[in-house]
Length: 444
Image 1 (tube, rainbow, N blue to C red):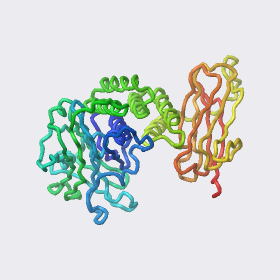
Image 2: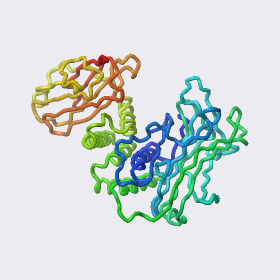
Image 3: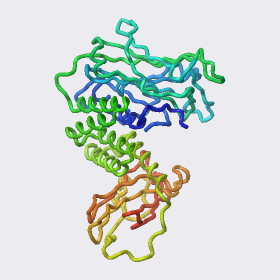
Image 4: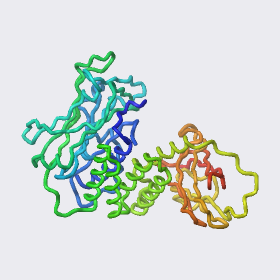
């Protein structure tokens, strides 16, 4: 079992919402269950940094315990408020505090695991949040811990721990306006667990300001408030209210990329994988339309979609042998198809394609309208160990009843790994077409 702590319900969905808020945090100042991550932000500004990827470069940008580079013996802590390392808080908005614990040597493959345990009860009892006013006076805020932790937490270079606290909009409205600092502290000095790490660790503080809501509401502020409320409802085990808030936001902002990803993750958690994939694809299309010069969508969005595709691949039965019997006359067949690569040098129509390919395009045309949608699956057959053999990269579906269209796959960061790949076209549980192609290293 992963050492990451589990929320009461839908943990990945809540963290997906907080990850989405990390994008907005840069404009207006949350599926991770393995590697360390985090986000930081700035004060509100009218122009959002749309290119900032959520959860990216977390180790460099997180608030960490002072002096860890030299000692590398204490766990590192990072803390975020409403998805940011610095935030403006408004009355009648929820307040979400997220604390992450990491192993101090995440880049060392030989790092020994580290056990975290409190004096008694779950390991979360060893973590506390200190809130101080601008004068340094200790505050007593009624923070509610939303996570259920086991007795111990094991940190290693690949796994960390996470805790989330919340205040309701009503509780935030009762807090005095002003400047505050929040800091997370870990104290295991009285732990009685054998082989547990013992000591005190503290992360850098987060600065927040509680003030009146702005007179002018930007689209980013509207988006952030709705996604904060959705995350808050999920933390309190109220998914219906969370869906209603997201639906309201998408009615106001139908092209909101982070909200589309958030709702897709909620649909995936409810087992509605096809609907979730359509929303992910819509979010990717919106991103490509808004940012044509950026080669890849936000990392958190890609990670959530890939996690869904991995789950679908594990749940899929083994691929059946391609049919040898003739297809029925009333079934659609491929009339035309082509696979080509969009490269910096132009269109390449024959495999192998260069690793500098910006995107792959599979164009298709059917003999008649398809009763069932077509589904394309992009598979890395053999990349020399960079990805597992037969790794499902992505999948997407056409609209029902279409007779022609295109499926595309954008390049990963750093270009395509050299190796062999496969494209599969499915319809109604049957393979309609399968095609192998290769990627080769682009000469420098």
